[in-house]
Length: 602
Image (cartoon, rainbow, N blue to C red; front, side, top):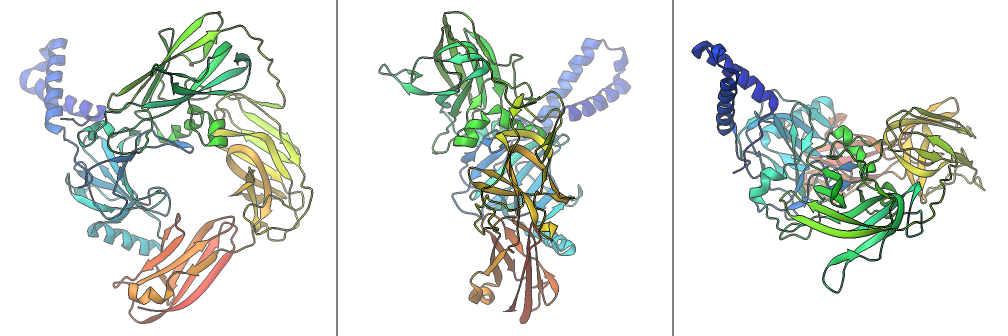
């Protein structure tokens, strides 16, 4: 039976209290130090037995995972477990441990509707993407939403307001926020630090997994100017295949010289489901010596963007393929690494280097893959240092060609050479309503030559070369990659636009003058369904604000961003029966506004 973790803070405070009592009652001050330690050990053992609590099931249905802790996502690691809900919503969600509700959040993005429960062992459990809360919680949330006239709320109840027992129903499973489908997201965090850790070990009694991780391919990365693989200084992917004897091997021999790194494409699987999951533990040995070891069992949210250095970011951006690097960039401070080595392999002898990957999941299932690197002398091309050096270990500032970019120390994972340039468009066409427009009459395309991820936001300033549009609030910086345009926005200041970016790439400045589209959904059924629904969308700068009123009074509209659905359920306690005038205002990020009015009858 699994026991709950007892936090150090709890252990310390309880132990001090216990020892103080023992001193007063039994003259513990005269005990030898070893006797004190023995007594503390006895106390700690009893404390664990008394206070430990087996985790309860969060759902009444068989538990299967659609996502695990540490799974690789765009720009972040997954911070919890995703439990399947059979493709539907509405299952009762139960508290996995006793405690009290410390936070309730509602919004169109992220977790959507979520509940946070603090427990006496110093942990917090989080339940996300909920459809609705139980009535006593739902009533308080709605009251707050009307008081603040906002769908988005963050509430922090007192310790005594919402105590919960283990197994108590707190909400119902859903698909709210940024969920990709119906499921229940659960996290376990350290209450003090808010650092999430892998909940899977405490849910092992509810899950089955006898399948080890699967390795699909390796990525060999010669270090620029320092290494070469099979006659090339470029990255090379080698597939892992099964040979005629049934053993797994690389698709072709690897001959290398100098300094190289390796990345691995792999995933985990579990019994009875087709889903793939992230790999918890990776080790790489060369000639039986461990040179790389990572364990994804916990991380801080402020570390999560180090994922862009944990993986080969170029492969992800270009091909949406995750290769986990088995070498560590000098600017990567992620706390999951267990070796002091940076994981790079130095091939300096004409011999065979025996390499072994060991991959393990949370259940201890392990995969072993043996392969060889043949040391063969090859001419290593010199590094061509073209462009402006941006160093990972110092502050960087660039000004020129209408561009200003400031990258403070700690925001690059390694040194990079960038080539800031200004590319003028061949034509000055007016704004095209196509969302993939890349031609601007207000600024050229500002490019840095390549895409580079940043750890924190860094200030980028671009010059508006044709500052002729009278309403400066309509200007916005957009990123332009592979003919895909993404609105970033920004602030206008004396003929320039400023924006905080988290990725270096290519940008230009456009205007957004088109208001959002607002279309009623099943208007004839509003009265019968006791629900008003709209589809809202915007072609560029995105939905930034909305407000609904019935006869001039605030009406609570809920917004599901992923489906672009905006809806208002009739509330008998706050809305009057009969005919009313509905007004809805929707505004985008460039302050373009659409207002519509309808007569409704509840």
